[in-house]
Length: 150
Image 1 (cartoon, rainbow, N blue to C red):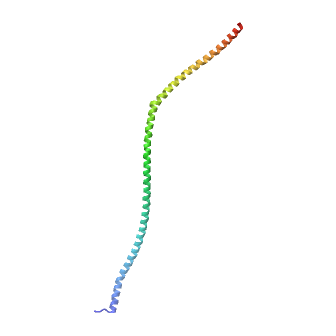
Image 2: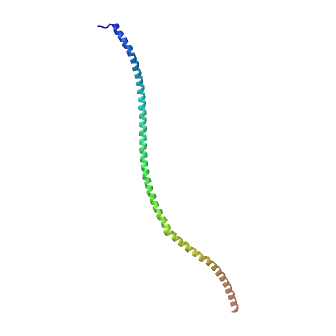
Image 3: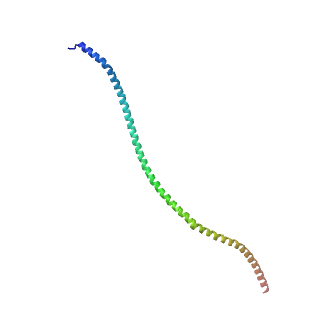
């Protein structure tokens, strides 16, 4: 059985009609694929930007970690210094309490007793000055009387 041109044309039209919905579906799929490709491209670009930011953050974190390590070393040194100073302060407190304070109390006692003696002596000195002045007058009077008698 041989097919005529009309038969082939009819078969072609039948296939055309049946393929038309498939063509439409393929077109829609191609449009969706294009849209998906665009979205994937945008996502890839965003991912690249995120990776760059993450790299920058990692570098900054590394720098911060280095700085923190340096600071930790300095703080440890300062802690050692503070401990040393606390020990020295304790020794100074003990020295002042056990050595300096008794000496200061002794100096104070000596000063107070000396002050009392001088304060009492001041009154005696004034009395002695008056007595000396009186003696001077008497000696002068007696010297004049002896000169007159001689």
